[in-house]
Image (cartoon, rainbow, N blue to C red; front, side, top):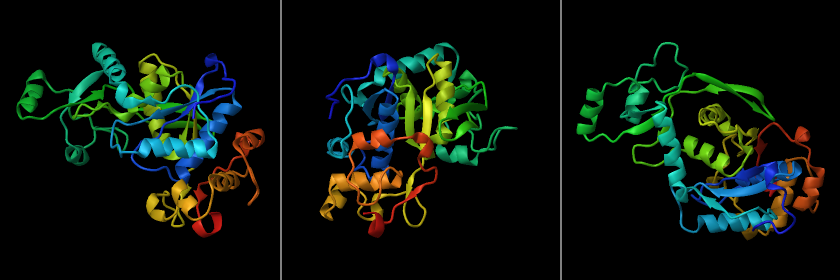
Amino acid sequence: MPHSGDRPDATTGAGRFAPSPSGDLHLGNLRTAVLAWLFARSTGRRFLLRVEDLDRVRPGAEQRQLADLAALGLDWDEQVVHQSRRIRLYENAIDRLTRAGLTYECFCTRREIQQATSAPHAPAGAYPGTCRDLTPEQRDAKRSADRAPAIRLRSTTQWFTVHDVLHGDFTGVVDDFVLRRNDGTPAYNLAVVVDDAAQGIDQVVRGDDLLTSAPRQAYLATVLGLEVPHYAHVPLALNQEGKRLAKRDGAVTLADQEAQGHSAADVLGTIAVSLRLADPGEPVTLPLLLDRWDPARMPREPWVFHPDRDA
């Protein structure tokens, strides 16, 4: 639901939560959303929602996700933004990079990339640069073989360092990553950078499985002349086997919890306990959690969800 109280000044920047509408949010997603809200509101920032719907979209998922966030008490400023309605922004960014000589066409399949020999001194897992220096004749030959190209960034570095509130300085690989896939869809690493800058988002709070993506995104922002946001990559929720929590792990969505007799307020309490912001069974609200919030005291280890104990 849109924020109904006094809005922070727009000049103070913003935080965000940006789910993909591929299904219902599970408790790990909801926990990250609560953390993003706490980080933003505690620093006087606006809090925005963005639906990242460039890939698989399940009918009704977005509506259920927004309803679940509202049921927990989260509010947000401005209208919800959809990536699928912002294609022109992404194409404009690619055009700028292309005019600067910082893109090239890539005709590689995923299998070819996996089988390719890496360039000398290239970081492990980096794109080997197979198509980086193709001649015009070689590109024409691949097009004539009905291979639609992806567009890659022509990176001028192999590493980039970002600062994270929870992890400190983190240096990660920056290769010639994809900007637009061969089906014409803008790639995540491009879209998220363009969107964050366009929306005035200067604080990115998300799961720490995306920490390794931050150097690529921060480097791209720098190349585009955009502000690099402040990062906070928070611990994930895991199942009892130590794997990332998923819907197959039982009653892990808000609807599942309610079917078992646990209200949205109960679920918020479970999340609060996992963040050491409340005692088990203590009634809580988001304003109460905001009063107690101190990022320096939040757990740095993953939250292992035990359905029988935590629900």
